[in-house]
Image (cartoon, rainbow, N blue to C red; front, top):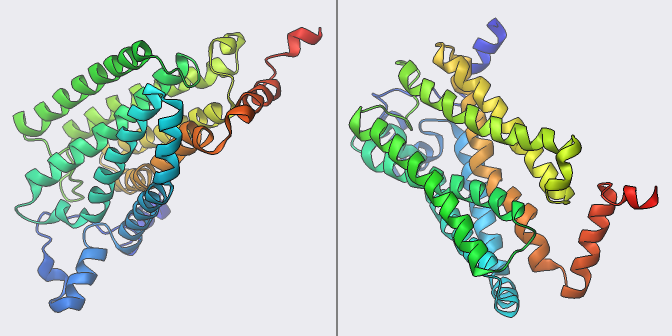
Length: 306
């Protein structure tokens, strides 16, 4: 545990947050401003990975936009059009969140930082819930009824999540999105433990369904199974980090910071690859063969040969 404590205290990986941190600590002038923006609050690697990953993904979306819009226009899938629009909106919010990390420990920016983080994380959670709901209704369902039903479920879940977090933030004054090493609030980390426990539980249930007799009820797509596996592992690790932080362990804060970087830097690309990439890249005549091959590899036709 001593080695873990030394890792968590390393200022080069993730700086220790303090309510007294100001821009003055990072020098003055243009060089000081740039250095402060890159290294402030969390450290150079933390901020650089977030910014580069988010910029590259938005740039990729922009590069593929013309072809993607043409594909959407030709196929006229309501779900794909809505989901692609949501992906763009959330990607831009996440880009702003990644580029404005210095606001987290800048005096006077607490409220706007909490609002930005609240809407960004809620948008990403909306995509998570929607993806699971989309795929449970069948791959690439295009009916307006399916779209309405899916977004209704997702909207209710996100609405409750937003309401609870807003009560914590503005009702009880709990800084949910500001991690302070000097004053660890167990009340705050208790909420995150419950939040991560629910997510890990849902992904864990789906993961074990894929390895049971109920797997026929799930989409026969290996990409979806890999997505569920990654999200189950990430949320399980995040749950462990929150539990450590709730008990006052600084290593828990450090580990939670790592999982947060992975989520904000790589979740949206993972979602794109899992759900949208085939839709945009495969030709109509080949798409059915691709899914048939995936189902065959997953063992869904083994019974036909017995």
